[in-house]
Image (cartoon, rainbow, N blue to C red; front, top):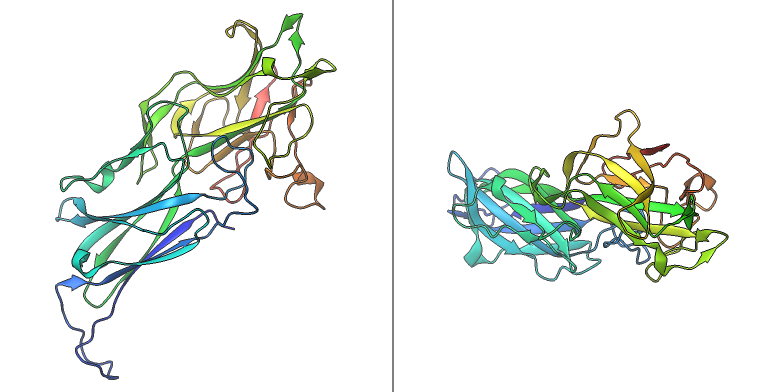
Length: 358
């Protein structure tokens, strides 16, 4: 299933008379009647959890609100013209047709259409366009690092003409996904009690451009994208028994599962660490590496970075019960083994990241 949302804009054909003679020229009217046809390709599969926190690399979506913005060319820039709220779109909707009312049609001309979709838990503030707002100025901003939620956007240029026109827009995620899946976290290291498990990113951003997917506006630096207080958990055989997850999420025993969305940010490093009771003393750390790239890399929109493998949230057997290669594979922190970060095929690309042995 593709991780996309399609938007089609279809102008109604206007003919000079009711005739079967196709050689007659269409009426040249001042406005083009427009119908939006929106298709959400990736449906919800068994109520899979994809809101933050993230519990698997499944690429389903929970869009509940879709807006379409029209930007008209003045010969130099594309400036905001109109916006349309696609009413009736609810969690799980896969197709919606929206006919623009006669009183809100678009004048003929060259346009760029921007489509944006968010979920009910949306924490982004999206640019409120005015007549002077340029197409490339549309952005989504969070108040602080850690507030990221899923947001989709896509655009396409098109010329509205009297004869009718069709344009398709592919909406993709404008945030990245990061997942950490670990097991057998030790209760002590060299005699010192372990209290926190953290995945730290060296820098974060608060704003993403909806057309370019470029991140900007520095946020918390460094930022703990995963921060688990292990002291609230039970222990057995000198390891923690695991964190509490949402109902319906299944994980292996003695495991820690957490993740979140992240605004795109460039030239970062990721550090996995176990910390002592004071919250600042690092008892053991691992540098995260991207094979073929190194320890410094970019976090890109619609890319999914996972330390440990978890194909589905609802079970530990992966997507294919007969394929053991896609079963859950949390990283065992009692043995300094490689940590693999993957992106499911429903995301843009799969990244394999590894931990460097201390």
